[in-house]
Length: 347
Image (cartoon, rainbow, N blue to C red; front, side, top):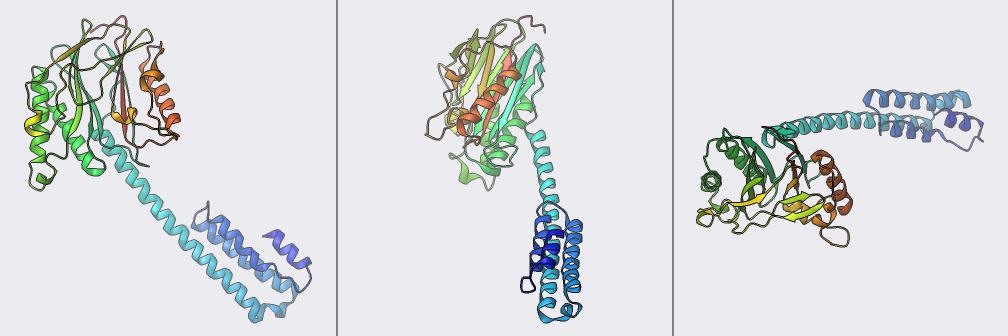
């Protein structure tokens, strides 16, 4: 504003730079609030008046100068209104983000870093911008028989319907994981909970169209065995001394929520999870992540050779590599859990 006023006073009488003063409040509105923007707008009007007075006091009352001053006042007032509306929207967005983060903590609680003797790390990557939670899910629960039960799943579909289905399954798992004696009984209960929800009034049109793939695991504190029921979910991966082993279910069950197709008897698969091993659970958003050429993310190839035992460091490296592969934006939600049985594990 000082430069414009000085140059305008030194320029020939037929050159008028005063209207350029409108750039000052316009630029201020990009980063400042309404009070600062209003102050700069007033200073811009003052600069225009100063130019007129110093050039020729009678010029202040000419129609051209009055029109320039009125234009500055109008633009300045409009910018102040814009800043007020923007700040109001910003406060609303902050409130929405707060509610979203609170909903995430309630629905998808972060897993503790230590569950019994197991060291655990979890990661959730939402595909939607600004989203904190989607249709992927995971949870863990301790039982009275010195075991840890975990679930990782993926709801078919997106949006709030998928979030509601994920919340339903997580609530059912937390309510029943420590009460159901066997793993097949637990999965039968979870499948029934999803089917009952789909049968509620207003939900019948979703029957047969909505389902949840899930893997439910039981890890005893002692020994090296893991029991698993796979309901159409991507298989877990065991990392042992840098070697990758994909644990394919011998008799996978249908996804949860398919009615008669999903009812038992469920077959329990068993695999070895020794001290020092790293167990990776994930959703298909990891496998289906594509780069710019359309190539899928080669999960087993990328994690092969990992020798560190820290689950947090492992997931940080995997998350960074996955986002680099897709260019920073996933096409689908992705959830990952890394579990380590420490070499000197104690109950």
